[in-house]
Amino acid sequence: MSEIDENEEILQKMMNMTSKNMKQMKMKEHYKIIKELGSGSYGDVLLAEHKITGKTMALKLMKKTSTRKERFLMEYCISLCLSSHLNIIKTYTVAFETNRYFIFAQEAAVAGDLYSLLEPRVGLPEPIIKRVAKQLAEALDFIHSKALVHRDLKLDNILLFDKECHLIKLADFGLTRFMDFLISPMSGTLPYSSPELCSLEDSETLPLDPSLDAWAFGILLFCISTGYFPWNTAVCSDTQYEEFASWQRKENFIDIPSSWKIFTSQALDMFQKLLTINPDKRGPAAEVLKYLTVPWRKAVLKIT
Image (cartoon, rainbow, N blue to C red; front, side):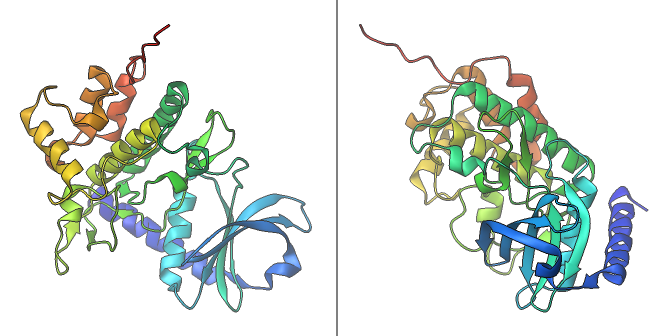
């Protein structure tokens, strides 16, 4: 039995046990709702206080009308398995259901998410960028060591515990699956998606691979460095992406696309590894750790 098969078997046992022991109860009998932290098509995230222990936590509510129980159990159990890492949101052994929702509890992030910190067209200070890069690289490396792929790395899913990003945590494992799981095209224009995913036809599938996370990581690092995305979609019809792809194929620093000229040669080398067009040659997320001691953005000359 392969490592992936073993891990899948363990996860299935956890899901079965959780399903067997999960209680039905009225949320407001046990929790005082403080405020809403977020909402989406899945449901809501609420900041709540347990009435007996006084402990504050985030409750993730997933609508039964749009969420299969198996999907809820998978997200909860994967989150629980990964939450031992410092830079992954901690999930508590609290899962229950109401008439309308499946619910599980996680630690509450006190300082919002990375999206809320970003100033459009400006980006973040380089020390903060590198703190984010280091912590995310280590979190992704841990996830990949478990034969899992996050699949939804984006600004909104990076939670902050201080505004200087000394502690950040990766969250939302609703799309996380084991390597080689076959995925279908995702709808909409997705600036974090890799070219091999963007080029999928409706009936095609792609085996899940950590290189998808590495690509999204590269896009996220560009975004927090500049305050914008390098392109809308990684397809040839997108002019900005095609300029980048052409530059990549030349394998040198001549004719660098204008939006990439703010970066040093060392940073460009890092981006070229994370954003290699061929997924088989793409560098892992942990590659970023080699570049933390070199400058990423060129110094701006001030004329006096």
